Amino acid sequence: MSDVKERLFKELEDAVVEMDEERAVEASNRVVAEGIDAYEAIEKGLAAGMERAGQLFDEEEYFIPELLICSDAMYAGMEVLRPHIRQEDVAEKHKVVIGVVEGDTHDIGKNLVKIMLETSGFDVTDLGRDIPPERFVETAKELNAGIIALSTLMTTTMDGMGEVVRRLNEQGIRDRFKVIVGGGPISQAFADRIGADGYAHNAADAVKLARRLVA
Image 1 (spheres, rainbow, N blue to C red):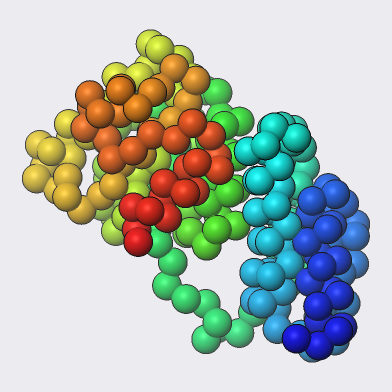
Image 2 (image 1 turned 180 degrees about the vertical axis):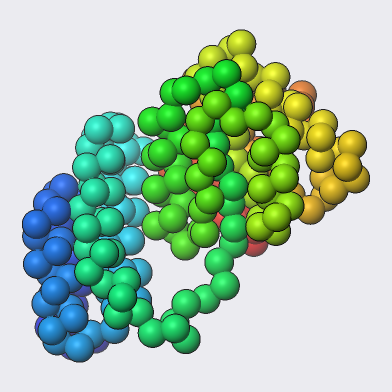
């Protein structure tokens, strides 16, 4: 790797970790001006920075607000670089449908998981919050997604997760989709009880789980 390229990738990575949107844009513009591969810059610069931020979150040095600001810097850089990605560089991505189950409007955790999945190379469709079970199932079928990711922070809406799994079973398509669950009141025991494929305690764990399930 050339010195200029290496320096710019490090600059992108640091801009994300240090939550510096302006610096991320500036470094991304320099990548374009130097004729450096945009996809590689996203992967080895911006995404690498978000991965480092995720590790800091895992180690409890960063918390949700910091991660969200890191993601703003990452997305600012991506806006500059995305139009310059060569089509042949875009690999087929594993698709994830994500949302907060019906009756719950708390979505910070879900947003965090979405960001981490996207920076890890997943193609994420975010349905938002207060989503009925049938919409998760129908969207996953329509997009031919590999993973359905369900979130809630309320004990009163947990059964909506089980309902998604029940509907997949009733339609005879359970084996087409991996179902992962997470949120404050959720546990591995609950995931096992409803027949989900896995439970993630936080965003970093959700990425590891998703990678394992599509491997």
